[in-house]
Length: 378
Image 1 (cartoon, rainbow, N blue to C red):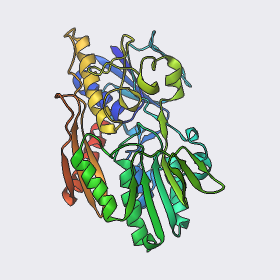
Image 2 (cartoon, rainbow, N blue to C red; image 1 turned 135 degrees about the vertical axis):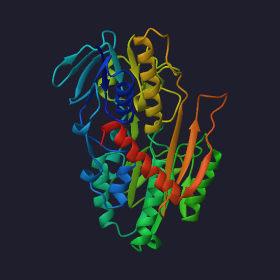
Image 3 (tube, rainbow, N blue to C red; image 1 turned 180 degrees about the vertical axis):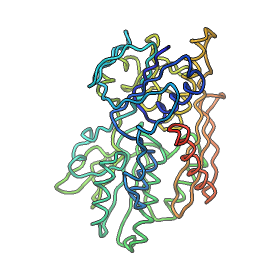
């Protein structure tokens, strides 16, 4: 049996395991490692933050994975040697035939001075719990929501958070007492899609949420509750930030990031292969020319699965990675929009937008349920 070791059980790792299970369960043994005991869709964090869901309600235990040829193990990766494909964990070591690194991105809150002490984020479950507690005591004032570094996971997520926070404050009759301001170092929310940009910026304007582009918050002053930017200091009563993203330390120490842009894993954009034979990287940790989002990790996983099977059968290379993905965007009021992005198939990226509707909210829920059935068999 050809052993494939997959580090990380997020969108990419789970989809890769499912693909290999379907295509080659009699030829491949897939070992799926993750330090967590369960999977949470990124968008489910918004349900916990704003819709009263609990973490236990949105977490899917990895123990429920029921896929032929796939074995999940809860272990923490402590070392990676890509030259020999040797991996050590807190439980032992592995030397697989093929290694796929899908460990995602981690959040470096300390990269922005003062943010750990006086800021909040909702990209981690701990951050969601902490911000939810702060919102429960919030009675009005100035809310700054700032993107602290680029790239970051799910480009629409900061704007989804702003729109859903507006909705909560209206419901609690606090919106009139609250000023909301979104800041970003980018020129637009989703640069590849003008129609998506227009919809998001219009939604912010309709809700009287200020929006400033080309502006980065460099530091917070916890004593004075001010955010420092190149244009001056901004006062706040509640600061919500999208923290700097980086590869996990074990990936950085492995040498996989050599040649990658800004500390990410260098990969062939067509195959997601690293320079090391038999080693691939997919998802948020990889330096692929696409946004960091689960849907792109999924399509990357399908490409890698195709390549692994093709090599098993000595049939050349598998499918070329096309950088395609569909992203659903929350607009509040039960309405969801959608952008269909294709970064690599043609001469230029294209990303048509579908306006928010209840039907797309239903579609989003159905796709989540379908992924759960596919990945977990439940």
